[in-house]
Figure 1 (tube, rainbow, N blue to C red):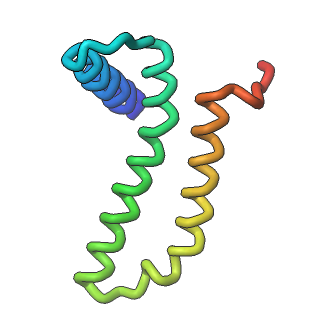
Figure 2 (cartoon, rainbow, N blue to C red):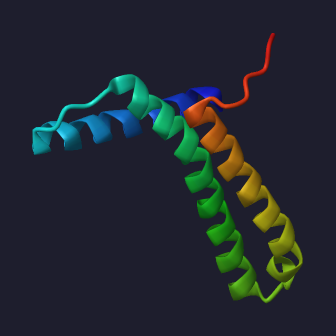
Length: 94
């Protein structure tokens, strides 16, 4: 699973760098990596949430209505973690 996630990060970084190079803009690879590490979990969660909504809507299970408050909380937590990862406000010591 980590290997797949790392491949997703690398692919996202490569695509962003290609866009910058095509536009003739300067870029900082480390900044792009941090940005992708911060935003990809949010995007994956939104994809997962959309998948649950489609399945629930088609099968009429009523699960999405029950899970929505929890999904909103997880979404907010992922945003805060992503912002913290990008800006590095809080660091945990090992």
